[in-house]
Image 1 (cartoon, helix red, strand yellow):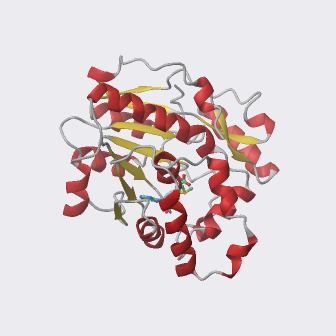
Image 2 (cartoon, helix red, strand yellow):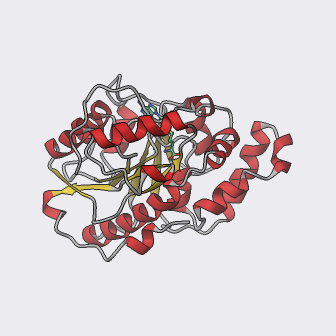
Image 3 (tube, helix red, strand yellow):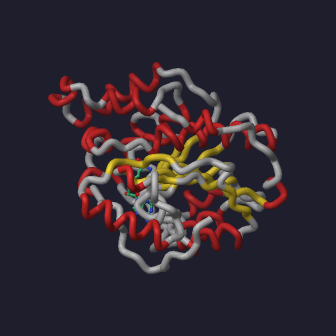
Length: 292
Ligand SMILES: C[S@@+](CC[C@H](N)C(=O)[O-])C[C@H]1O[C@@H](n2cnc3c(N)ncnc32)[C@H](O)[C@@H]1O
């Protein structure tokens, strides 16, 4: 596990945050597609396999999942419903959606999602993000059972969020701007029950944080890559972005040859589990990770 990078860094993945907090999700999902994002396709299928194993190990029939830095809820959608990442993003490419108002888009999304079969009937999904509109949208279309627009990097969780965190079995994070923000993560895990949740995340290589790994360990969790290979996150949008990303990935101890040299950011799965459960084995997940 590469752990050599400096701790104080500016984000090296170009941010497209003008799409993060719109009245509806179209701009964000079209941005993901236009830049060739594929993190969800690879990571969320592993997240589901992790949830399956967690439910077996703990004997849970109806799990509680926290989608951290959830945005409009794409990770929740791909976990909760029978839909692939490709099918999901294809939906928002349809030009006939251009004329819809935000509230008409919301109405259409709600009816579309209602018709998609549920993978985990009875499971509860909570969205947490600083983007108020995105969380509201995810809740309005029925993805989130609970939604919180709170910034745990700045403040302790509200009483309502704390009560929800006490129930959480699994925390997922995909594509966050800064892998498991350490202060937020410490507050999250501090508010969770005595039996800590499993935490599964897919940071861009070079964006992993020593401090976040330390926080996970401080809460008694053991970190594992499950033997999974790095996978493409998205295309670089310029030669300078590629050069910067390669330098940072290499400084963090990654061999970029055959990975970032191919023109893509690469990401890696990390799973953190309580030490008492860390020996529970998984079936071979490499085919699961191939993703769609
Ligand atoms: C690249 S988006 C990823 C969204 C989504 N998880 C996905 O996979 O597409 C990064 C998200 O992090 C959120 N974010 C930034 N700072 C945050 C914070 N302190 N706490 C929670 N979310 C934050 C942004 O609002 C944005 O929605």
